[in-house]
Length: 138
Image (cartoon, rainbow, N blue to C red; front, top):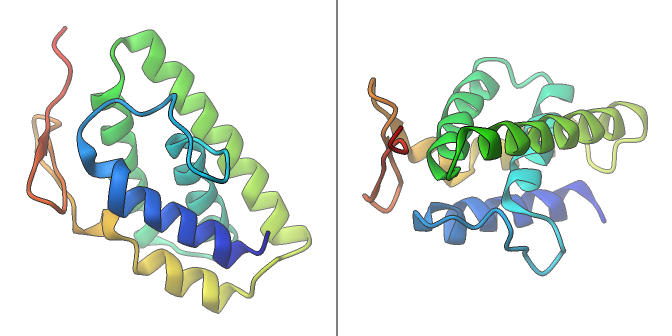
């Protein structure tokens, strides 16, 4: 699968069910990847292509969404590990045998709907559809 196809899947994930505000870690898209894996794919390719500050912004939002959707601290740790593993795998793939040129990768990355989210100081995330994803209660 070409990277643009991965990015379309990640964009679909971020734009459609990712922001639904429900826990969907166990759900998979038609390609068989979880939303956490898709976030990791986007981050890994963007890192390999030098996304810079945009990647920092993406990871801030993604980490808060993962944390807020996790039903427990343990589950959050597990999901962050999945994210990191997928980020590394996709980074290595983009660096060693790029399925897509970096200009295309960065263009797709910059246009992901996740960048329309807002993270508040209490950890709440306002999603592009206007819904709020609040931190789990301790």
